[in-house]
Image 1 (cartoon, rainbow, N blue to C red):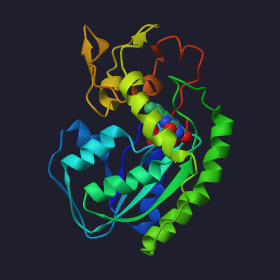
Image 2 (cartoon, protein in one colour; image 1 turned 45 degrees about the horizontal axis):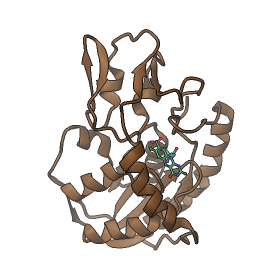
Image 3 (cartoon, rainbow, N blue to C red; image 1 turned 135 degrees about the vertical axis):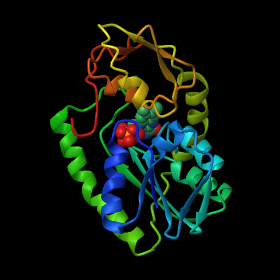
Length: 247
Ligand SMILES: Cc1cc2nc3c(=O)[nH]c(=O)nc-3n(C[C@H](O)[C@H](O)[C@H](O)COP(=O)(O)O)c2cc1C
């Protein structure tokens, strides 16, 4: 079973490619999270988590979700993380997560995709993004073939990776992942797309305008998926292009 979480479509694309090659069922964790699902996910084939890297680790919301549901059937689990540049020591923490889930760790693959974190960084333009995706396709394909054959997916953990995935990750989630900075600058059409896109149901419309509820994971779906681009984050996003896979 390919289990996908995605804010702006990169991991969704990777998950779809893997599912095409392995022939496995693809489930969208965003939908399960939105519905507050707490039941079982059942698969006879290995579980494959495909998700973005947040502060050099599997996103905290994804870890929490997987620890809430029960993964039944196969004992094996793979991890495919998309990222803007590096997953650093994410593999080490994926192994620990796998252990907590009672699964046998079958391996980890980093897939460099276009950066989407416009709250902090510039994102590539359409042409550059297209080139990055082009280079990612064989990496995804290779991982998918290995998964389809049930082999181990091997990847070395970079020497200084653990620092980023430990100390910096902790600092990041404790102090930086807040939704107070989101606000409107242009006319909002009250289309409700931000409400629909938020995987953690953190946005509601009040008088037709989005209000963030204090439980954000910074996935960038609301700000990047807003059709009128009226959402901004602090002063950081004003001049930045919005990123959405394929757009
Ligand atoms: C909150 C947040 C944290 C991120 N942290 C990292 C990181 O530690 N390393 C990295 O290379 N990219 C990082 N990125 C970039 C994303 O992992 C990358 O663009 C990913 O492919 C986005 O996937 P998605 O479109 O499926 O959401 C981060 C993005 C966000 C929104």
